[in-house]
Length: 566
Image (cartoon, rainbow, N blue to C red; front, side, top):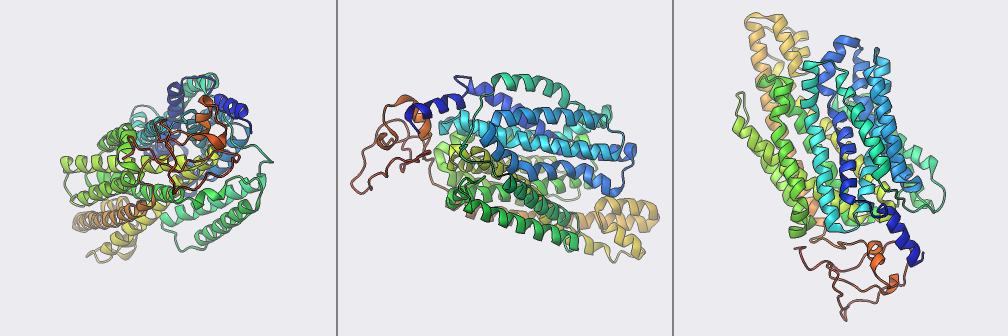
């Protein structure tokens, strides 16, 4: 590829001079909608149940159709964007998301609502990786990109955390369909803005798009996610769960084998040979594993043990959101000062300390303790996610940004599902045995109460009298004890993440993409001056080998920046 062609490609990728910070705002609003829809329905489930009268299976699909479909299609649409244009895929995703929201608002049967939620998952799978890969294209300078990723991750945290708050407010004042109705005016604004302001960018477009490989990736991820979710709902040893995990894992293994053999793969598997890329993906999985499982259990604790309403529960979680926003806002500075290794590692350590602090929670409300723990938890986890996402995206070649973003988002979804499965299983294992020998409680009632704390409360109310009070008290105590054990296990997983982070680089490398530097130099690729990260040429030492001949694609310099990276 000639110098002129590469510079022209860079100009097209950055929108021909479009304000990249305005582009970032549009991308963040897009992400906010997707993140909101992942959690906004949770508090509306009772209202949906009362209105539509779905079966237990239909209700499960109403809740799970969105994340299942979204997770399974991320790789498909992320790699498609690299081939046909990320902006094009994003705009189509906007349209599908708006149409699905309108269908959900008008749903009068469980089947229609399930179809709408699945269609929302298709739109979300098109939007999520496209936002991150476009961000990668419009911010070639790594320091600016770090700031942009900080804003991006903070918005994702805000959307996920404020979903229950917004959903609780809307359900209390309107009807359950209003949680989808809010998408329509926002999409009416963001769709024309995105068409006008967002730049088009593509990755390597040589060779045909691997349609079969994309379908294999979708089927494999779907099988694994379904198996993980079933395991988290208490069906870990059932044949259907094991079959989903085995089949999904086998299909993914075949997908990897196929990609390694193809001349033009969907995903360049050589990315996983880079320790920083693989470690970053693993850190994302571990961070989400801890966060989602803890949030689910914390919501149950706040509502069922402390007796808070859904809206009050959402408000109690707001300090976590504000701390995550602060971590995102300062993430670029932190990364430049201490580097990815210490940023991710100490983020895990801080989160583990917050989790251990929350073990002091008991049967009584302790607002100061909860607020302190949630602030540390939000700041630590967001710091970890920021450093991991930034390292993962910077390690990936620019032409594979869509595939890399899809891998990151799939890891995010898998970590969330595994968190619910693993920490939920630990919670159940600690909670259920405490309800077996409550004096006066019949066997069937004790078995029903062992399913969940909410079920125990309902069973206790039906029994009434001293026996019901004893069951209520015992279940409450067993839940708090299970919560303490779950927090301890989560802290151990977070410390494991801190150990994993030692494989990340000590300092930020390659703050400016090589292709971005081509726009202002006459040096051919093989003769570009080596820099210190601030544009100052650095002489090659005698111990350094000669640089290899020019090759197609971005070339990563072997040097680390000397200014602002320690």
